[in-house]
Amino acid sequence: MSNEPLVLGIETSCDETGVGIVRGHTLLADAVASSVEEHARFGGVVPEVASRAHLEAMVPTLERACETAGIALSDVDAIAVTAGPGLAGALLVGVAAAKALAISLDKPLYGVNHLSAHVAVDQLEHGPLPDPCLALLVSGGHSSLLRVDDVTSSVTPLGATIDDAAGEAFDKVARLLGLPFPGGPHIDRVAREGNAVSIDFPRGLTARRDLERHRFDFSFSGLKTAVARWVEAREASGEPVPVADVAAAFQEAVVDVLTRKAIDAAVDQGIEDILIGGGVAANSRLRFLATERAAAKGIRVRVPRPGLCTDNGAMVAALGSEMVARGRVPSALDLPADSSMPVDRVQF
Amino acid sequence: MLLAFDTATPHVTVALHDGERVVAEYASTESMRHGEMLAPGIADVLARAGANSRDVTAVAVGVGPGPFTGLRVGLVTARTMALALGIPVYGVCSLDVLAAEAIDGGLDEFVVATDARRKEVYLATYADGLRTEGPVVVKPADAATSVTAVGYGGLLYPEAFPNTAGPEHPRAAVLAQIVVAERFELLDPEPLYLRRPDAVEAHARKKVS
Ligand SMILES: [Zn+2]
Picture 1: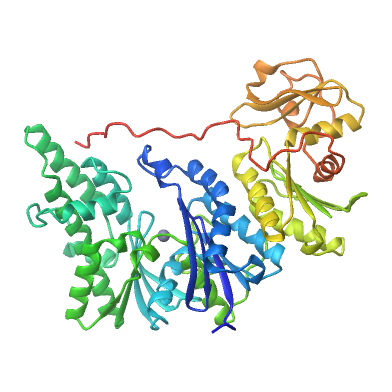
Picture 2: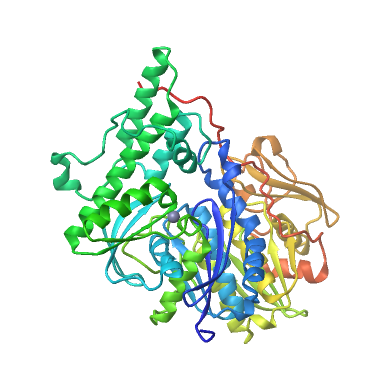
């Protein structure tokens, strides 16, 4: 156990400054500083505000992670960092910090894909990943279905959103209903008091004509517009908006499509394990429905605990640790931050 | 040894100073690639001086003003190296770096102007070896002067700055000398943004229909 490598991971792709420390599959520290409150009044993440916050948070977050893990930076055996995808200026702060550590400590550096890191993090909680597994990653920035044959080298995109990310739809509908940003947790909470079948909102890309080209893709823009129209019509008629019912019916529409497509993809690929990650994976209805529907098909579902689903440094450290364990070649010091890093490129 | 770098312009400049003199220097050839060029530049000066990171006893960094994205690459690198190596980090106004080189070249009263984009310049005024005003961000027309202008901003706006001389961009070798000799005020490694982030507060929602 103690001879397993000590890996530090840095994540700055959006508004969370994350530093995680793992030894093998054991999580030692997961320090996160969020600038979410600075973005709340803008109704969404402002890239320049996020980048400034990353610079200010980086050293304190590194210190906090080391303190929690009870290690010195000089004990670290390898450094991993999110190289992409994400906000360009935000990514750059993390990548530069990781390089500074690699140079100072003279240790290998792994620039990794944020999406693969969302998959790898589950190893910290539920042990080694089954090969292959199917990953459903849903957050404010991504909505993807991936076939994962090896989380360090072989990730194949099966489908993705063609417009808004699922988490974005949660934020926009929350705003429409007068709920705070970020919308996910608030919709989840309010929806528990509502009737999910009281309003029939559209399920994007599930019609027969869409299934040929977009069988495993998602679309949440039409749903968002449908909710807005419904709420406006209610307001125009002078009736109160049943916030809990709208939240529940909207959430059901999102979660229904996500779970249906994930299970369809698993069955199609002959895969028996589904892993759900990303901020929206913290949604209680998604966890419940996915587990229930998958069980009916003999498919297992793994979901990391909510704190590991949202963006964090532990997930990057987890993937870095796996890179070291599988003998992957480290990245070069001129590694770029790639805001549109393709899903199937696990490492730079 | 003092490791010095500046990323407050489109370029990356790195130098290593042994307390007596600059022993290695690196200048990036490509512009706006701070994230890619700085770390290899640091590795390059260390290798050419036959040194390693544990020989570095202090870090000096240009704190701008300059384009934000590049500026942050320099600052986070300096702060993180200082943390990892347990050494101090010193900030220097990037315009002072240009001024020091201009003073060494014989100038006495002058302004330093660098490109702030959006048709503006970062500007500071110098006399008798000291910064007397600035840095500020201004429109060139509002800063028009017949006094000698140092830096790339002067070259960009010849109508506002008809007399130009001296270096176009800061050099880390000069930055290192400033810190060693404490020629200008040494600052905390905090960015001189001089501008607030562009962001619009969320107002009432728009109708979709
Ligand atoms: Zn994410």
